Image (cartoon, rainbow, N blue to C red; front, side):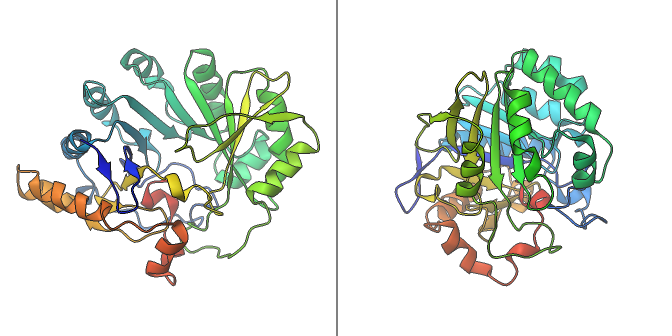
Length: 328
């Protein structure tokens, strides 16, 4: 079976948030005091996450990315990952993490065949890292990152370019990572920060980032899958590659193949849009998954064409959200 939206786009990729909690306090994601995290009984349980995942795989999802918050602050996460790894039609399980607490789980992830790990890392300078994250975890993150790379994981570093904070690290991170088989992806900043900062334009858009890199390096464009959110490049002589994700400019909407489900069960068909339905109460109400299937099909059948169109659904309140509560 294939999930096709109302614009003819095939939806085969689920971003599944397992928690809204995070042990860092990155200043572009939430205020320093944090946000009002939801109560535990509002979160989908592991068995509920399994049921939702299984249902969506039956509908045609073949890639699931586990997100948060920080997924590994959820102590029972490996139970879910073991279950997902047994689902026959699920071809790709990946995880986005800040790499602070992943260390004890690396060996089992390898054994389960979960090799695609995105590490959020917005600086390779300790002082800058601590200023952005408001926490002292630099050594732990760096050590776990190098371990993941050297132990054969397919690692992508997600670096959000923040005006006045870390633009000086764009070239150094490329220089440091040139020795490793890793992809460094630069993201435009998005205004999902719990209402702590608002903006309608950004200095560091994808063109500005590319022009900045071009002043130092010769590179060539790589061929990327049609559904890729990143435009990817190879620098001559580097083992690594780099990509740029126009997350604020939203140039990739025409081929979007993603569906999001938050840790509380909200179904989001566009990061910039309002939730379309919620599956938590349906899962708790009945063993029968027909209602959930019907609601998900309705949501996918009424997707906005672009992120700009989706933003119009709630223009005044959209950026009150924090990235940690909408699942990254």
